[in-house]
Picture 1 (cartoon, rainbow, N blue to C red):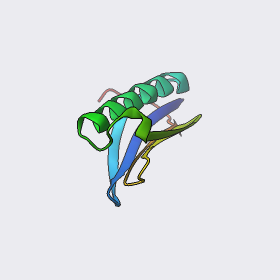
Picture 2: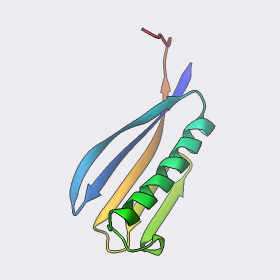
Picture 3: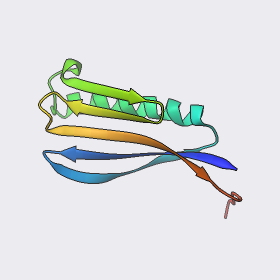
Picture 4: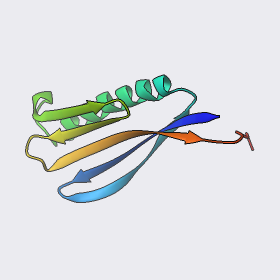
Length: 93
């Protein structure tokens, strides 16, 4: 059985930090939808926290299984990544 995980990592003024797992999804499409939502929330957060003044200061690079947000001054970036994992069995506990 294949599952897809969505994780992130970020850098704030050159300090790289591991992010967290947004979830485990049964299909790549569900993981991509979650990634799209996470990217939108991150953009809003950057503006609210004044990391950037407006959305135009955020460069977004999208690929099939990843998305990178970077501020124009290159001080901040965040990477979202989908990984396909092969599992033998899923258990609820």
